Every structure is written in structure tokens, then in C-alpha cells.
Amino acid sequence: MNNEDLVKMFHAIKADRTTAQQVWDDITRYVLPYRGNFFEDNSTESSVQWKQSAYNFDSTASNAHSTLSSNLHGAMTSPNLQWFTLRFRNEKLNKNNNAMKWLEGCATRIQSELLDSNFGLEVNEVYQDVCGYGTGMIILEDMPGEGWTGLNFKSVPLKQGYFEEDAMGRVLRFYRELKWTPSQIISKFGDQVPTSVTDKAETGDITKLSVLFAIYPRNNRIVPVGQKVAASRRPWEYTYILLDSAEQLGKPGGYYEMPAFVPRWEKTSDSIWGNSPAHKSMGD
Image (tube, rainbow, N blue to C red; front, side, top):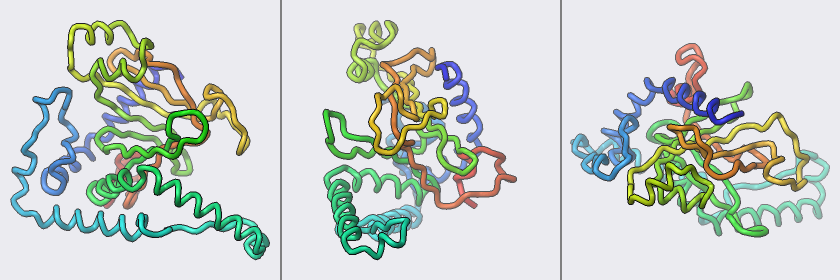
């Protein structure tokens, strides 16, 4: 898939959820005044509306939202206890003491990795979006470095994230529109950037540019579980693109699995919103 096709698909999905964003802007104004309006372009600090709470005459909705999101966090994924268990698909193994002890050790190790990561901080942002807008987004990646360095979670603001579903309702393609200054882009990709970016950085231009981060399947490629392959051969590809010019930033990478997760409070009927996953996520 080339960059021009990705940009066209992203713009189509972005335009398709305009109706939902109008409702989300109302929710932002009266319930979540500091989550950022969807139709605003915050490419400079002067364009950010710092007095969002001016419309919030009654704090009932805001307080209820905060209570619900914090209670969900504490009840479902509390950092103070192990909130999950593991079982084998084969029931015979579930009755084997040695196998179950090994599995319990795996669960303990998973819990330790979650506690060592930034999961608690990032999932809290997801709960706030799910309780406010009905949709949240989070990405799971390995920490950068050689060997195993831990888990790294990234909550994606709903304003930035877009996705498509496959026939089974799973995330098929994921897009994130980032706003980075030329210096930030160079710090991320080094010399693998267009000259237009380096020219802006040299002149001290700090205006933020639109960068598209996209994750999509790579030619139905399949890698057996546990097998390690180069990033260019993994089933899921990711890339960074300058949104305005569709120019490549850095080199494409790869994942073994789709790392983006989109929990939703409720899905509406396709007959109302058509096939737009962004619309279906808004709830009734």
C-alpha cells in the first residue's frame, strides 16, 4: 500500500465521522472541558482554547464522569491486585497440577510486567474517553532497546485516532494524526526526513506539522507463533507520513499482531450509521 492511498483512505474516514464529532464536541464542552475540541486545529499554542470550562455552569456531569471512570479503573484493572487468571483451552491440562502451576507462574509474570509498565497511567485515559465519548483507544508496544525491555502503552486521544474494522469487528487499519514541530520530527527520524522539514527547522519554525501514523495488514502475511522475523516480514506494517505531501518519514516497521485496541461502551446498528466504525462506536 503506497502513501497516497493511505492518505486518501484516512481523509475518507475522517470526513465520514463528522456527524459523530459534532456530538463529541458537545460532550467535550459540557462534560470533559479539557479533552480538546474535535474541530479545532491546535497547531500552535495560541490556537489552544485554555478556558474550556467557561461552558460548564453545572459540574454534575463532570463529577459523575470522573466517578464512573475512576470506579471502572479500580474495579476492572486495579493496580493493587491481580485482576485476571489464565486457563488452557485443553480442559485436560486445566486438571494437571504441574501445568496449572506453570500457568499461574505465567500470570504472575504478566502482572509484574504490567506493574512495571505505564499501563496504569495510560489505561486511566482510556477509561475517561470510554465513559465520556463511548470509545477509547490504546496501543501496546515493546519498550525500545535490545532484548526484552518491557511493555509500553500509549493511550490515543479520540481526536487523533481513526480505525477500520474487518468482517469480524476487529481493528483492520488504525490511523493517528499527530501534530509535531519540525524539530520533533527530526528528533524522531534523524536525517530520514524531507528537505522541507529540515528547512523549517533551520529557520526556527515551530509550527506543528500534521503527521499520519498508520498500521495496516501486510499482504496477508502469516508468521507462526513464537517465530522471530525481521520487521519488514511481519504481518502488520506501520509507517509515518507527512499528511500534506504524503512524503515518507523514516522507514516502515512491523508488528507481529495488531497493537491497537479500541474498547467501546456500545455499538449502534449499521442501519443508522452505515459501515463507519467511528460512527458505530458512539453508542445509543
